[in-house]
Amino acid sequence: MIKRVTADEAERQTVQDEKAAVESAIRRKHATLVAMADKFRDDSLASLNTVTTQLDTRLTNDLHCQRDNLRQLSQLQQRLQESVSGGKGCQLLTVAKEMREGRGSPQAVSKLTSVERSSVGRPVLSCKFTEDDVTQNVQGFFGSVETAWMEKTAPEVKVVEQFRWWGGARY
Image (tube, rainbow, N blue to C red):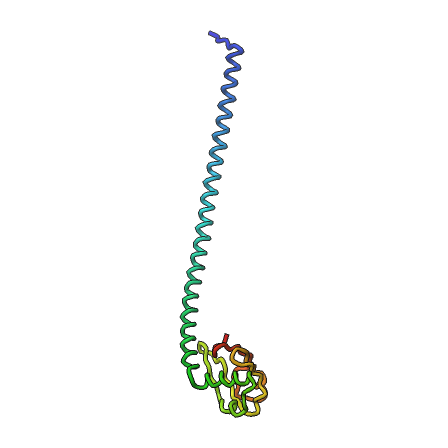
């Protein structure tokens, strides 16, 4: 028996075939987009985790550095308080202040034979003053002590540079 297909049935079959093809293409596109979104999400999370880990490491290192700096500052402050409370350090600052104000005398400078200050184990100022060295430029307590002049006049100088003083501390 031969079955006859009418035009309506053929058209209906064609529409159903096209509909199935479109639905199949949509499912493939949807699956591709879902896979791309999953990959993007995974890559973004991995990148975010990497950045978060790096930031956490940096912040932890910075925190440790800040703690070390605070501990060193505390030790330095204690050393400075010990060295400035009387003695040669205080005497040097007094002479420097007097020199800045124009009240300094060669006798006051000559009494300072040697001044040793240490800041975390390094010499801050070490020099020998004599009456001939009064030509130094001492701007005083909140100014700078320039010691370059001692390079040729005083071989005992260990440190020849410009120092900034604030209450006896180098900064």
